Length: 464
Image 1 (cartoon, rainbow, N blue to C red):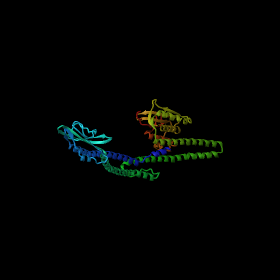
Image 2: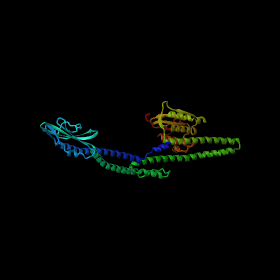
Image 3: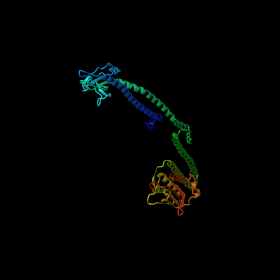
Image 4: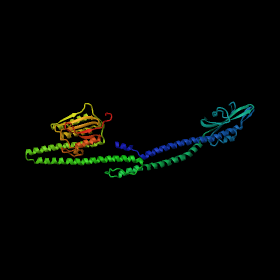
């Protein structure tokens, strides 16, 4: 299975996720209500049957007496018949004399716990003959001759009738709870569907939109979706700007490449028609020079494309301007070999840190040096790195005539050249890099009269 397939399988429906969460909450609530209803029903059933138990015990206690110096009792049938509601229920009783001995009934019948005899009845739960029972005890005080003291009457019953009543009451409460839960779930699922309608409107607006339409999305949505619309519009704005820049770049690149390529084709044809060696040598020299220019233009086009791409995804880090300058000078050595030029680095011994993209900064400095070597310098190029109160700086000076300040703003644009020639790409690349790094570009003159371009950077955090 492909990664795309796995990702598709892991996708989830927001509607079903919300509905599932709501269903779980409602199910938990229904379960809690069911437990509460069961506890209430059990208590109600116990209270109802406890009154019957206590009543039966008191009926038996009312027949207590003494005969021949012993406790006597006449257990009325009606007292036990009231407890025989369920055919499966069993009823037990026990009458204990003041000394605890059995008068009548089941001798081993468990008795509810009681601290002292009193007029109040006590009830309790126990196990008897392997079944759960509920028992109640009452006391009567006898003061007969030979039978003086508290006589305890205990009546017990199994829980079948109680359990049946508990179940009946619980089911009676459970039906409306489940009905309300189902109705609430249906209503909330409908509410979720209505809540997701704005997202469907956004989806429909995007799906029906022309692929070339990158204008801001205008869809009526609730406040909660405004952040999503704003994010989509920001992405569209960035995409529109990127596509516009790339389109302009491609158009101007095609225009700039068309002219030298046409010139090369014409010179090749002239070379084919040359009748003598002198004309052939002249054409070859022009062809070689034009080929070098095309190669340099292609390199600058690729360099500028790289800068445009990295402007959106720069790998920002703390870098040393001295090392960047050293690498850029090393890249320019081959250019200086064709002419009698000296390229010198003027930098402090300690690092000069800036926060930026290493590749973009190196490319910008390389283009500055290349412009100075190819179109300005007569004998020397100086690269200076230093720190000022405003922040780190790097400058490229040459002993050429320089650029008139009236042309400076125009020279920052692509394919605009000054009086000194060139394609105009180099300074445009430098301008883009400076903008991406919040750096300044200044036209300067050294004390020696050398013309220079300076990039000034803000202090990096932690290295100011």
